[in-house]
Length: 232
Image 1 (cartoon, one colour):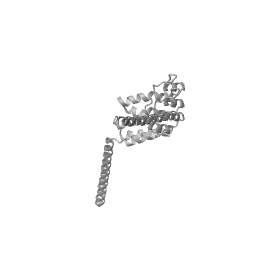
Image 2 (tube, one colour):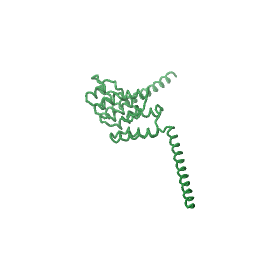
Image 3 (cartoon, helix red, strand yellow):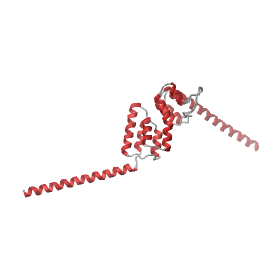
Image 4 (cartoon, one colour):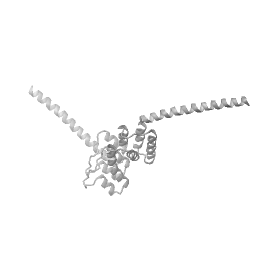
């Protein structure tokens, strides 16, 4: 009996170990593919790999993370994708350089702005958000921050303001072809505050009332005109 139990436990252990080993190999392959696709500037492929569980901060043999490589290849859309998935901007490669150091080395001021602003804007969104926080996030294509600000009701956005933000997102998409701006426009469009519905209802009531007043004025004018003709 003891022998049977031992054999059974051994089989279970082998199966579990085999599954763990397979999972580890799959993870290694996902991480390898992420580094490759970042170097190819294939944003869509990177999205899919991150969904499957690739490590956002995996390192190459040179110690470069996907963010290091994205900075080197200068793809803002891809950089934003990595930042929004939690890429650590403070990680150093084998030469003790961070992603910001790489951006400085390659003299890419627009990428330096992204790397410096994203952590600050995230902190701002969590602690003391303003409409300027939302404006920056829309302008720079940070869909996750926009989602947080709106869905967590961190800001009150009127219908008129929402339309202005959507317009900005569309302008940015036309300028960059970054699909994050399409996502942002949809997120804002789907977010309809209660007060906006109330305003729309009040506007409708006002419009109806104004039309009724105009109609009464016209009827009164016609009646007076008829009396005037009779007297004449």
